[in-house]
Image 1 (cartoon, helix red, strand yellow):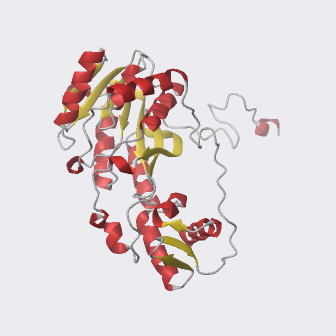
Image 2: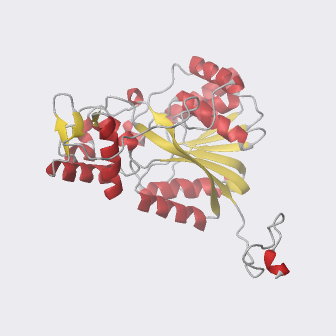
Image 3: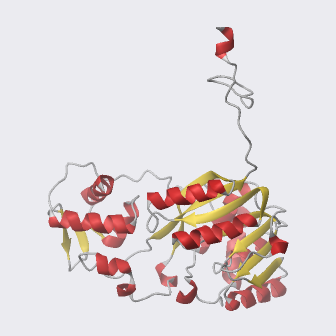
Length: 336
């Protein structure tokens, strides 16, 4: 909680902020932030103006103000939108104007199309796109359409529970000549045997409840061949560090290695959120003040890349500095 308090103080040293702006500067989960805000209000370290719906400092904290040193060109993502990815995005936006809207029943939320394009650029950079077989476990983002518009000879299979998206993807694949196979699949049922170990890569945006997260990732991992790669989204807003640890342990138990993590990579625009009554959120009942509806797009997930490997026993008998894989390191112990 001390770190959470510190991050709140440094953010407010810079300027008063709404609740939705304040949580963008946090590493902690919403539950942790909400508890900390309540304590800080009680101690008059911060105050809340119900008219502006903004928090400010009760008094100067002596903390240095927050500084954002992210790259202004890529916003810290490490990739920029250019070339074929920009062209595919323009085409994607053109042909998906009639897309089905997200619905609450399936916990759907749409990633900003620009971030879909950047995610594809990351996949291409890591060798997980061109000529690859790719599984999308859930596709309300219509990432399958974007990937195949790139014309990098990838084949895409979509497993989706929502019949609306299955029909829509099939219609677009037929009308635009895209190499996509879409079939209905309920994550609560056994994984199709014909798809086990059949893919070079998977992409999924799983729910952040731990049970659902494990179920989605377990099914997706079953689809991967050895050295296949997976891409998933995970937030710190709805997943605390203990939950992150549980997810990492699960991935390790399934033979997966985390190779890349791009923080706050994907933005979910509020305009596409199927929920409009924010009093339905547990957050609204727990927060001691009324933050009002979001005044900016705040919900972001980190992009995580994992890779499937065969566990191999590593030999640590050779010495402190070298083992059988340190091929450009000379062992100084042998010269003693």
